[in-house]
Image 1 (cartoon, rainbow, N blue to C red):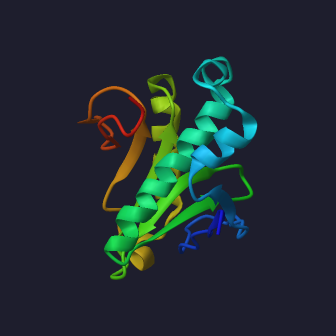
Image 2 (cartoon, rainbow, N blue to C red):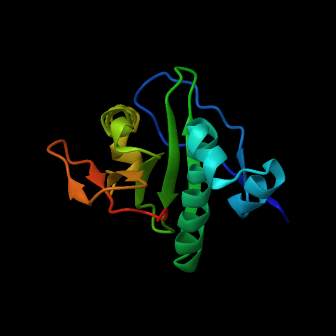
Length: 158
């Protein structure tokens, strides 16, 4: 009851990419990992990679809470080309959206490019168009980029 699997999403693809079907594992509460590692605020600021992993788990946890309240499911996507999407939320009626989670705004362009590349691979005649493509960041303001990718408002860290 401490770890929860995030299953792989298996969309219909236009490309010949091989979808990895192994689940990702997250602590049900990332503060458990932080406590086990003795990760103080000062230590996390010095180790942004660890901080980023914990932030991603925090966002996935929150997405699961909101998704489960509506009957939706939260998946992840990885394929053999190295393309990885942190969260694909699928509603019971088949609507879906994809999100990348980044700790800082410096990685927004890379995350948006991943989302757009991913969306091009999905066979929308079978899986439908994405409801949204979003980059969840820890700071900043919400807006919609020219390419249509949504940057949600600050999500979590204060």
